[in-house]
Structures are given as structure tokens and as C-alpha cells.
Length: 366
Image (cartoon, rainbow, N blue to C red; front, top):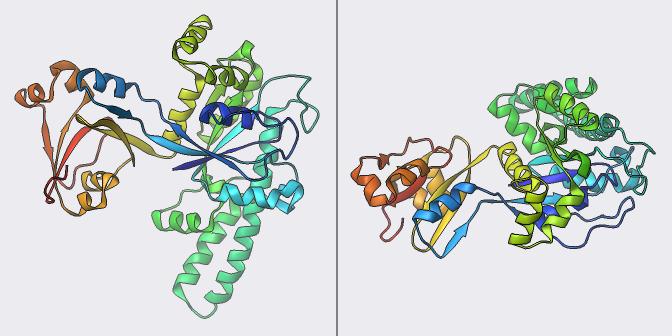
């Protein structure tokens, strides 16, 4: 699971990345400050872990996590190599989804590459470069597929049809993700690494006067995201970087003074997790309580395989209950006595928040 942070130079990408991953000093304030991407691992905050720990005492509590890649600022002409654009675009091809940071604050001390703050203009600059890069990829792949298709090769004929389908929205200035593709078509698109096929979450970098993102600069981004069926998370990069440097009690005090329950980056991490199409199930015992990240729609054996491949192969059944069951009945023993412990088989589709013990054919494995 990997998301890439993209945006124009000086929109606050690295500030947000550093706060999100507690990566250290902020990047310098000039274009192309980052050539090789920084990579960090981010915990996905989940209050249910604390609830479970309140009833099941254990040595460790381990949240789900995702990898975040801070990709250098993209400028006009990136698709043709401007500002080392080809190198940066190759980094985006490798991630699973995109966090697009958009500057929604005015600060004369921080230069804007175009000389003015224009969120929609910034989005369109990035979208254009990504679409142009994809058009080049699709064009080259289509030429090859059509040459091979002339021999009657069925796979190449089918490939060419999918590529033509991808070419049409790109020529109209639309992302490939706007297409309704079947499973086989999506698999082909993934193999091409098309950037505009990836899901996008907009991150509106706001100032401290608009932490909830109600101002006009954020609203235009919300309107844009709504048309795409997307989401916007407002984040004050400056504030979040200050919060990231504080300890638990000091951080809580600062949040309370500003009328906030948690850092905005907690919301961002959860939204990025959802963007990737993942949710969590839990295992809980004396050694650890842990959130396991799995794609939505996975079966119980697949979820068991997330722990260890042998568990999927030798899966027998899953003992399942909910966080709500634990809150009501207090112990696993009481949950079982109340008839709330369910036994699920190989066809069971895992639900977000399931607490599970897997039973397998390997001695000592759970």
C-alpha cells in the first residue's frame, strides 16, 4: 500500500509529508528541492484499537500502516522533461494512489511558481502534465498492439481496443479513472502504470485562519473534487508540523486550545487508507492487539493469509465477533456465552472492524 504526494513546487508537500511521517526538518523553499522521493511509513489512527485494549490487556498495540512517497514538485512541461519531470513522473507510476496537495493559503514570503495563488489552475497544470504523460504511454503501447494485431493475435486485438478506450478521455482532457472498465481492462491499465487511472485525494493546504477549509480557496477545490466523485481534506501544514514536534500531553493541550480533537493528518491518513480500497480487521490476544490491512471484499482465508500464507492454505474456520460485542459483554468468554461468537467458513467476506481468531490445520497456528 503506497500513496504518492504530488503538487506544484512550494505548495507545502514536504511540510505535510514531514509532519505526516515525523520525518524531520522541512525541505528548502525552492523548486526541485527533492529529486529522489522521500519515503515514510504512516500509522493509520483507529480509535477502536484503544477500545479493544481497554478490555484485552496486551504488551503491544499495532495499527495498520501505509507507505507515503513525497514526490518532487511538478511544473509545466514535466511530461516533456522540464524540471526533471520524466524522472518525477516515473515515481508517480509506482504508487497505488495519489494525494494531490493544493495550495489554498496566501503568504507573500513563500513564492508561487506562477506568481499567484490559484488552486484550480494548479490542479489543471498537474492534471495536464499527467494526462500528457499517459497519452505518450498509451500511444506507444497502442502502436505496438496494432502492429501485432494485424497477424490476428487475439490478445493484441483486445489490448488495442482497451488502449483506444483509454486514449479517448485523455484526448478530451479527462483522466483514465473516469472510464467504466471491467476487471480484465483494469488489470491491463494497471500493467501500463497509467497515472491518471490512479485514485486521487485532494489535500487543501490551508492557513491557520481556515483550518476547517470553509474559505473560498478550498471551496473551489471541493467543487472540483465533487465533479470527479472525489474527496478533499483540509490540512494546515504549518500547524501540523508544529503538532508533530510535541509530545502527547502538549499536543493535546495545543489541540484543545484550537478547538480540535485530533490532528488533521489523522483524518488524512484514514482517508488515504479508504482511497486505496482497504479496511481493517483485528486480532487480539496476550501478545498483541493488531489491525490488519486488507482490501475490501477479501474472504476469511485471504485475510488469514495476510498474517501468514500457511494460514490461508490450511484455513478451517474463523471465530468472529465485533468491537460492539466486546464493549457490551466485556470478555471473549462472555461473548461466547451470549452466543455472539460466530463461526465463519471459507466464503465469509470480512467486515471492517471484525475481531478474529483463525483456526487452521497447522498445529499451534491461530
